[in-house]
Length: 252
Ligand SMILES: C[S@@+](CC[C@H](N)C(=O)[O-])C[C@H]1O[C@@H](n2cnc3c(N)ncnc32)[C@H](O)[C@@H]1O
Image 1 (cartoon, helix red, strand yellow):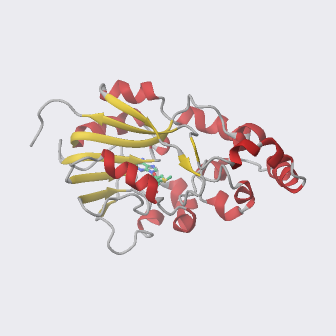
Image 2: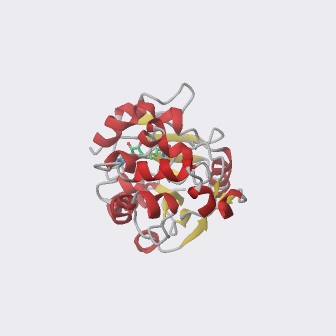
Image 3: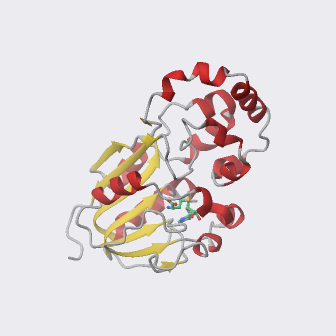
């Protein structure tokens, strides 16, 4: 099972990765009337709807331990081998997790197998442009992330019919993933913030990016370059909600 990374870095996840209510609303809406949901790569339980029957799947023990009281029952397993019968759930959900799976195609096929009606995925589209943090300070993040995030075509090849919706990120997003602080640049100087972003933990060195960012913030050059961002309340950074419809009649 491939839980090593999150068993190592997942300890403080809940402090900086609090579910954002606007993202939660968007996910809840596209789950439609699904009454049973399997949340794969569920982590500490962010975005698990409270008004449906949910089963969580998560391989990393450090993440399972952070699931609070009242969260869905959890099975320790990998997306690539879901321990459920075909069409066991009305919907399958996978939030910001696909890029961690050792075999993404197999994991996606497993989502399609266990879902009766729809699969909902939140991921990042590697065809998107790098935002300022990556382009100007940490280009190595792109080198790591682009190959591991599946393309929209990779996902479509598994599901066939699917809708792709842009998910703009609010300027005060409470879920501290990589793009969350696009309008709060000082946050990236905080080791706690970086520790809750998996790609940062994979960088062999943070220099010279960190020094340059600190300098640009101190002398005002970051602000001068990104004045246009400060007036925006949300930004499309390439995060996408994918809603795949399962066709055919398997189960009820
Ligand atoms: C960025 S976290 C997202 C967690 C949660 N979905 C959320 O939105 O907060 C990625 C999660 O994927 C999990 N993961 C890693 N490898 C996995 C695999 N093979 N199958 C399922 N989940 C996996 C990690 O352990 C981690 O909990």
